[in-house]
Image (tube, rainbow over all chains, first blue to last red; front, side, top):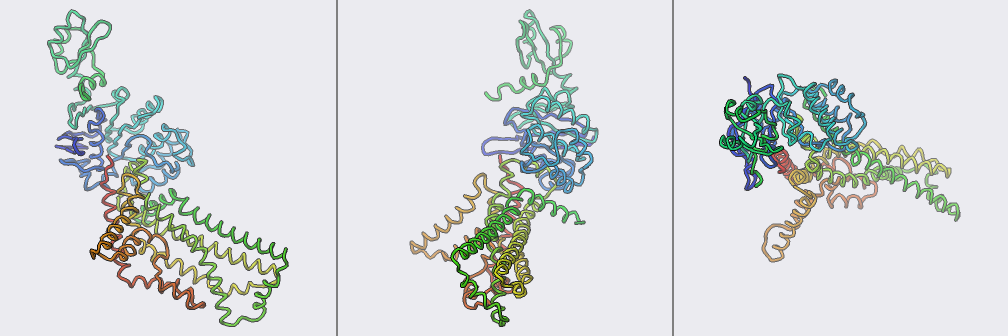
Length: 285
Length: 324
């Protein structure tokens, strides 16, 4: 398998806090990786390191290039949408398309115009006249027309309404993603991305605390709904988390054998958000 | 436009023009327009005032000199007067240009960090040196070219306006236009632009550096820091400590890194003397030969090299400045 990103021992300190603390991970081609962590866990720093926007200690190779030294070359094959609505406010749709078409060697103008035709954006419209959702549509149209091997999305849908959010991920999956492309996405709206992710990475205090593909996550973690009579037995198996619903307890287990759990009650695949909450317990305490 | 690097630079500069159309294009156009309008109002006021009070003699007395063939000296004076009219419009627009370029440089690498659109530009395969270079080109080549075009067009419009006014009084002054030197004026103005770009380097370098470096209020950093240093030097001098020439600092450091963006700031006291001493050759100070003689001074080249060094620092900051 060819790895798109290989990081080993990434560290980065901002004054007294460690944004990245000896983090190592590997991202293969053709994956959609969710990088999930609480505020200040180092997600954005990790992405910035991948994009060559910040210096760091440790080894990092993105598409075989060093993002610190070969950034210009790297950006021909890497695209990113960092944060929502970062397009310059003065630019017009026509100008943005013209500019990217002329400075980006892998930009397909026809593709971009086809995406734009499906929106309400007009060529003379300026970014400052657009709603947040429309800005993201424009940005996405620009990015999807670039034949990049790696797309990095940092909170791409923050503050958008549900229609734009759904459409955003739908467009990405239907019109952009294929086995030659890799997407890394960070978001707090875990529910919306969990069904499109192929891999899950949890980051906490600058460390990668979970790194697994979604199938492995389904095998490793299990949620069991247990009646009051068996609650004590369930607790003996050291669950990650316990919460009460309708007089029953829902336990979240990590790596406990299926047979043991089946005896306790009904087994479900845990939602990523529940897994996240259980893993990050005590982060802000 | 065939080589990729040139094409990329063309689009980068075009991008700057899109963003700063107001300063680069509309500021000189409006300045020229307002200047024309003021002159037109002056002419009309003169006409009305003259008609009301019957002051024709004053006008006519001066104009009778045009009835006979002009002597060589008179022709030269008339030509110089008209050249001066053409220079004057560009002069006014140049002052505006100085302000435009000053604030353009201060904002060029700061505004996109403030509104975070930096993240969009950085997502494109553009090198930071190309980005910074495009801003230097836009500020010190593109903007002056537009200013000169506006200045010359306004100047010619002014000349035509005055000649037309004279012809209303039955004075055929059209032949006088032959004594003007529009091509020399244009050549002098256009030819000065490369000199301007080089002369302005310490200022563009310093302002862009502040623009790339400041986390907030780049103007304060850019202006207050050199002025504070100057005041410290002045204080040491006052205390009797022979540090370094205080005057030297103000004119050759502080002045150069802040005010070199004003066109013509290379003209020294010697040039002004030439203007007053001889009426006919008064505009020679604006000739290319005179203007470029500043290149013979070490200060010019030291400033240019210092400006380049500042730009190298700017590129480094643009590459690594992390706003977290």
